[in-house]
Length: 244
Ligand code: UDP
Image (cartoon, rainbow, N blue to C red; front, side, top):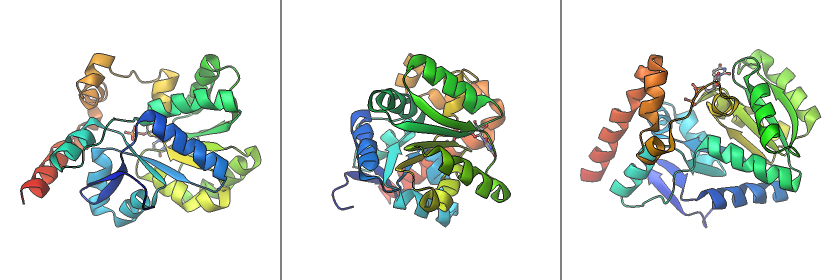
């Protein structure tokens, strides 16, 4: 798509969109009716994609790549094509729920631990009572479950599918199933259902503004330390690319 304003961060394209623009694009996908994949790129995605060409291809073939993660904004500045705003998966889900209530878009929540998608759905319905959530299901990204899950979703006929299997499994799951599902907006959302259901706590807004949400998450979920190693690696790769 030639008309996309995008930053190239270490070979991965990220759309330079605000929340309003991202929502407008997703609404455009619903109007269009054809299947579209939306990804929420953060530094960890980019580090993973360097070793996983299949994942890299999915990210670069996506119809919308949201700039999730403060590190991407820093990197985009250093690399000379600044992104304007951080657009997180969880906030995109919440804003999409508000829009869907108004417009009557049907939503399906797939993934997360048992009961979490259901609880996230209840919370979204509490906030937006008219929201039509046509299904929630935990399941797993295991290939042997795929046909069963695809059938459940097809029968529910949603406009929007959010998948929480963690990256890169959720993006691969969507990529494998997008055409047969024919859903206008299918997006991997990582821990969004955990946050919305209250299972996990988001960082206070001042911490988010400082760009330190990752540090907050690490302090609450220390078993993620090995994943946080992606951040210095990402910073190093960005500097190396800039000064080479
Ligand atoms: N998850 C899942 N099945 C899996 C792996 C992960 O349901 O096989 C869920 C997990 O419970 C969580 C979500 O995927 O709700 C996101 O996982 P993670 O926190 O690792 O992703 P991140 O938000 O860091 O991308």
